[in-house]
Amino acid sequence: MRSEARFGNALKRLREIANVTQEDFGLVSSRTYISTIERGLKSPTLGKIEQLADVLGVHPLTLLTVAYMDRFTPKDIEQTTTTLRAQLLEVLSEN
Image (cartoon, rainbow, N blue to C red; front, side, top):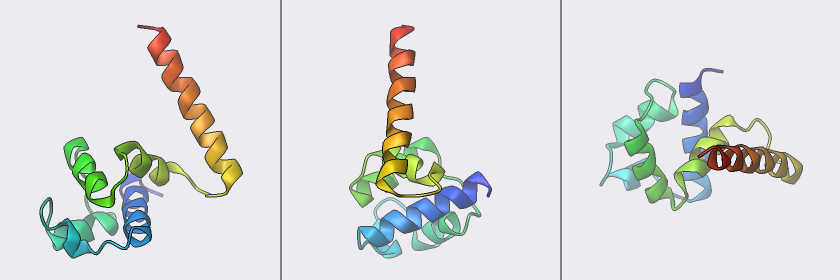
């Protein structure tokens, strides 16, 4: 699956969980733009990802992580967050 489609699926999934409509993004994006992202036709910038996550009430990394997770079992979430934590700590230790 293309990264645009993965991100669009994640945005739609989190939007539905948060009970947020495409129109609720009105202060940061048009409904049409949200729709094109959800259909995998456009990729948002990092700044836009921050704005979208803010509307959803999640951290931007949550939105990106959901885009790259294939399954959502507690075990899969634990494995993903463990890997992410280890990689971030490794980056931190190199500074």
